[in-house]
Length: 318
Image 1 (cartoon, helix red, strand yellow):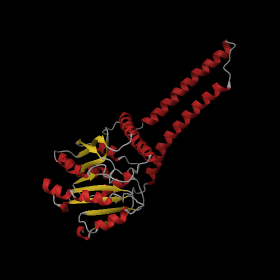
Image 2 (spheres, one colour):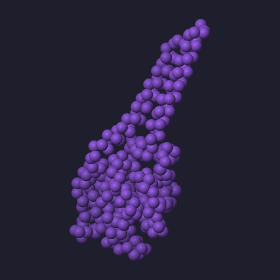
Image 3 (cartoon, rainbow, N blue to C red):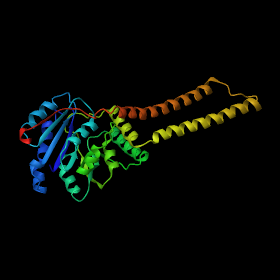
Image 4 (cartoon, rainbow, N blue to C red):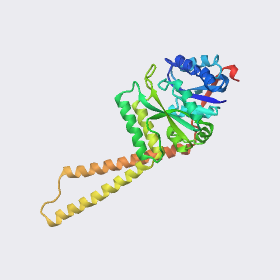
């Protein structure tokens, strides 16, 4: 198998037919440009516990389309785990990851492949323009990537998603990393090898609405930062040290007022300010420690990352 394309799908019944059509149009493009026949390309759709008709539509199509496979997960495991399931199942010498919402144009995949042939192990698609995105989404994404760059020692490229192509040796290393709270674009950057960018324009969503709610975006950001940086714990330590020193100096000031002046520091307001500052700092520190402990707890259980309920494919594939 020369090329595998992994497409995570979650509640995308409105666009699946169009998605599959555009993905299948890649086969003649690869044959004409690179001499890769259709049989050497597999397209894997990972159904991540969709609650609509995404799975039945994919099933009916994969039985008649050669080279199309559908991996059905037992429940909704989340976007990063769905990608992981597809990558681990992929058999290609090169593996592409692309979301199923058609914001990333499938027609860019041949360009990524051509760039990889220049001697790169990873070619990540870097967004130079994002259509149909709200100001809040653009601003928070920009803030996240730049914060991540400041907090980690892993050079995660700015303005990139999971849309990329990887060589087999990168895929093999990635498959050997079983961590549960996955930030795949960071993990691939951590692996190293020869990586480069290919700039493209991201399109507006073809149909439907985004599945990345604000809560999911926040969880994703926390996973990205805690997976590659211990700086938040260090910040909590520095904050505790600063408050301890400030409290000590304030105590000396209170003692000075009591011994050498007739004015003593009394009053409910000043007491409440100190209590609230100390309480807030303690809770913040405990919360940060708890985030890291929760991840250690999850890793210690050693449960599988995902469960595949079934794999569907055309009899011609077997």
